[in-house]
Amino acid sequence: MVKEGKITEGSIKRILAVLASIFLAMSLFSCGGGGGGGVGGGDGGITQTLSGTVATGKPLSSVAVYLIDSKGNKRSAITDANGKFSFDTTDLTPPFYLRTQEFGLFSYTDQKSGTANITPLSTATVKVANNGELPDITKATQLNLDNAKTSLKNLLNPVLQKYEVQNADFITTPFNADGKGMDAVLDSILISTDNQTIEIKNPFTGDKIGEGTLSNGSVSVTDPITSDEVNSLPQSVASRKYFVYVKDKYNSPEYGPIMVDIVYADNGKISATMTATDGDTGDIFFIYGNGTKNGNNISFTASVVMCRDTNKNGTGTAEFTGTIDANGNITGAFTNTLTPGDTCKESGSNIYEGTFTAEDVTNATLANVAGTYDAYVTPDEWTEEGPATLKITQNGSNINVSITAINGDTGKPFTRSGQGIVYGNYVIFRVPIIMCHDTNANAEAEYATFFGRFDSTTNTISGIYGDGIPAGDSCKAPDYDTNQHTTAAQGFWRSVKK
Image (cartoon, rainbow, N blue to C red):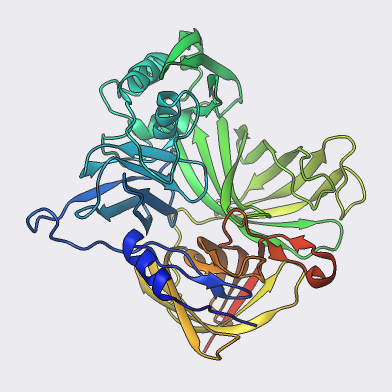
C-alpha cells in the first residue's frame, strides 16, 4: 500500500521557510525529504554560489549533501561523478554548515560564495575547532577554524610536504579527486577523532603513524609522524572501481552489487573501501580494509560483519583472497569471523564463509540505461511489492531518475525525483523517498540509495537499496501490529523496461 500524505497550510509555510521538500511517509514508496533550489536577486541580482568536492581520496559520486545556514534554512544537492556539488546561496545567510547524508563528513564556511570541500580533512578541522564535537547542525553558529587549521597542519606537516600541499587550505582550496596533491593526501591517510584525541593511520597497513590531543580548539601533537612513517606511505597510487557480489555457503541469495574501491600503491600494498548500506537507517557507509597485491594475487582484511548476526553490537573481521584475471576482474573467497559469543544466523556459528566476484568498471563502456521501467521492491522481511514507474534519462555517465507510485489512501499518483551515475553496466542513484512501511507517518525522508546492474539481454535493472528513512524512524516488520517488531531499512529491487 502506498500513502503519500497531505500537505497542510502549515507545512507549506515550512517549505517556504526552509526551502526543502517535505514528503510524508507511511509505507512502501511513501515519500519525503530533499532540499529545494534557490531564488536569485538577494544581492542586487548577483547570484552567489558555494561549491566544492566531496572525496575521501576517491570522489564520492551520487552523494546527498545538505547545507544549513545561520538561520536554519536547509538545502540539498547530489554530487556528480567527480564528487562535485554546488549551491545557490544568494538568499542564504552565512556561516554555512555542510554535511553528507552518510559517511560522517562535514564542513563549515563563513563565506557566502567560493569553495567549501567536504572531506575527512574538513571534518577533522570542524571537530578540532569544536573540541572534538560536531556543532549543532540545525543552526550554523559561528565557529573559529584558524587554530584548528594551523595545528592540524602541524600534525600532518610531514605528509603535506611529501605530497607538496603545505600551502593548501583544507576547506577552501579547490581540488580534483585525481590522486594528486590534496587528493593524494586523502588517499594516503585515515583520520579519526573523538572528543579528546585525533589519530592518523596508514590505510595500506592499518598502523597508527601520528596522534594528538584536542584542547581549546587546537591539536597538541603527542605522537609526531616520523620520517620512516611518512616514507612508508606510497609515492603514487592507482585507483580502480569494482562492483562486487557475494554468495555464502548456506543457500542464501546472492547479495549485491556492492561498490568497492581499491587503491593500489607503488609498494605492493593496497587499501580497499567497501560502500555498503546500513541495515538500520539505510544510509551508505564505508568499510575500510588493507592488504597486498602480488602479481595477480590479491588479499585484504576489513572490520565488518557480513551476516545476520545475533548481537547488534558485535564486531567481526573478514579476510578476502582472490585472483585478478586478464580483464581486471577479481574472483575469490572470504571468511568472516565474528567476536566470540556472537552467532551468524545463516551458519549457526561465529564463522561465515563464501565466495565473491568483483567486476572492474574503472574504464568500462557505459550502458544505455535510459527508459521507462516497471519497478518492484522487496523490503527486508516483506514480500515483493509494486509496480511503480521508474523513468531514467541519461547524459553520459549522469542520469536523472523519477519514481512514480500510487497513493494508497487517495489512489492518486505522486512522483519523486533524483540523480545518479552509471559505471559500465551498473547504476547508483538517489531519490528522496521512504521505501518501507515505517512507524512514523509524518517522517521527512532523506535520500534512498539504489545500487543496480543493467542486463541488456533482458532490459532489466536489479540490485539492493538502502531506505531513505531518517534517524528516529523505523521500518515495520510483518508482525509489527502484533509485536511491534521492526526490521532493517533495506531490501532488494528490480525493474523491467516497458
